[in-house]
Length: 301
Image 1 (tube, rainbow, N blue to C red):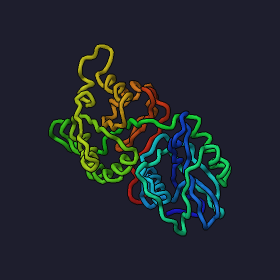
Image 2 (cartoon, rainbow, N blue to C red):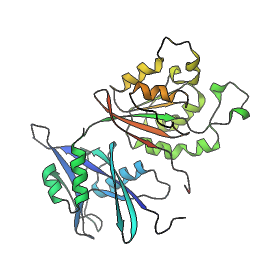
Image 3 (cartoon, rainbow, N blue to C red):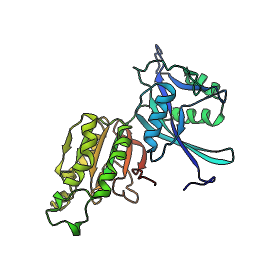
Image 4 (tube, rainbow, N blue to C red):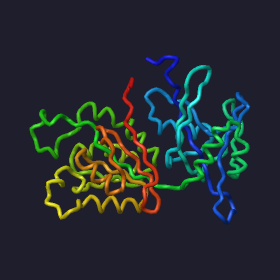
């Protein structure tokens, strides 16, 4: 049960596009005008119950601008009070949808504009939004995500009598699949790679099918691959380095192997991922430039 001191959660994006006919790669930033407040702001909105933050950001950008976007690297959140209650707004970069049609004005947003970055900074009503745009422009705008995902919660080993590679997801893990898939979709992956263990393949199969993708089963992503005599490196390391020079991808593997994958990407594995949790490694030209972590929300959580 929330209280007046629990923060209101919201999400949005700094939506950008290359400025038409600009030879030097200058960009424009999307702003929305809200008649209720008579202000110019970045597209954002409140989190719905049990909604992943990534999904909220994509939904709110579409509702306020008409642009269907996938999310790039994460930006610092904004924290401030509204009517005496704390509010936290999470932001990402997002490239504008070139196929978007003009949004009809309504009582929520009556104008959507793209302005050159400098003009957008001056037009924004709130200094915190202007500073966020400046910060966004200091780093790469267009990156690709490599998602390292630990499979959802499987049946306990003690309750499974078959080969471990065939051990499936348990009820809790299965319940996490829908919000997990929604969150992954917000990142726009174009490849899905998985350990050939059943519990990993089950974690990403429904998501891949919904996105029109094929799950690529990779034995080197399995726990069993750790038992193979090594020559000083693990075969999955080369796979990760290749993916860092490729487009958006999801890799589903196991807790014991994930530190190998993080190290291959040049990233500190930290405390490790919980079942169903994933890290997003935003990369450019083979190098990771930003990271973030997400766990699927659970009803009432």
